[in-house]
Image (tube, rainbow, N blue to C red; front, side):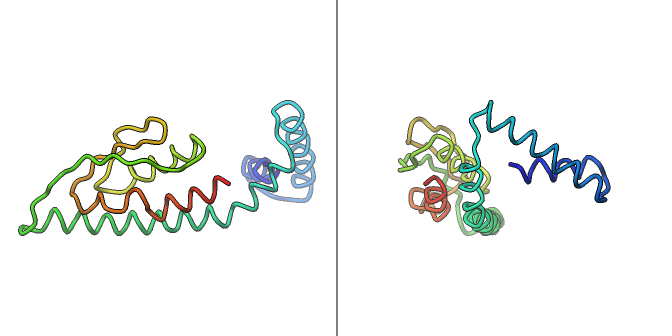
Length: 152
């Protein structure tokens, strides 16, 4: 959070020199101290977040790869005259522990072309798939496993 405050300070100043950097370090420290004291934030939480950054970057990379693969699959499905589109509603459960993890996975499903999360109640998802082939692997997807690892 401290680095985020400092980066925002530098961006808002539009230039970087020693005076702006030193003043930004002081202002960022003051805002970070305020967040720690009055908003329940701590340096321990900060370090825990920084340890998760490599996993978060891997998750984004895998999600983008899944989105691109789904784009190709949807294009093939639409442009192919031999295959018939067979939409399906799929219901499955997840073992995500936090509501945020469940919401992230629901958004990942919706971002992937050909699938839309219709409902998320508790740990039960209802997903509309453009074709039955897209429904396979929703309940044990790699993105779900990666999000589950990021939750811990």
